[in-house]
Image 1 (cartoon, one colour):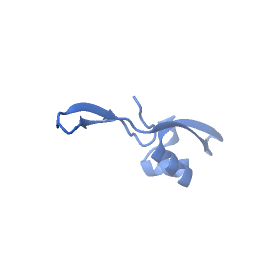
Image 2 (cartoon, one colour):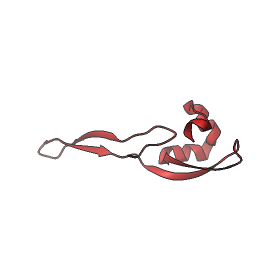
Image 3 (cartoon, one colour):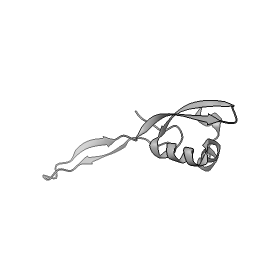
Image 4 (tube, helix red, strand yellow):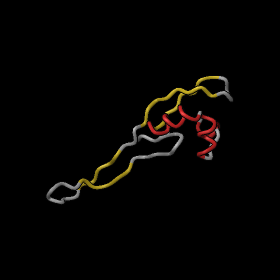
Length: 78
């Protein structure tokens, strides 16, 4: 099961709906990737499994600011 450690994105469930309208269950997996980012509090790189959207946000504003915005600390995700 893919889950983002930072944003908490999980697989979503729903139905396939073809032309015949016969519903069959399916899942949508989040785009979770391995991501290495520098954590100034620890003074080293931290490796995380995060979604692509979270990777872009962390790269833009930094890990500490992104975690603060999500209401998390570095201890919560490690």
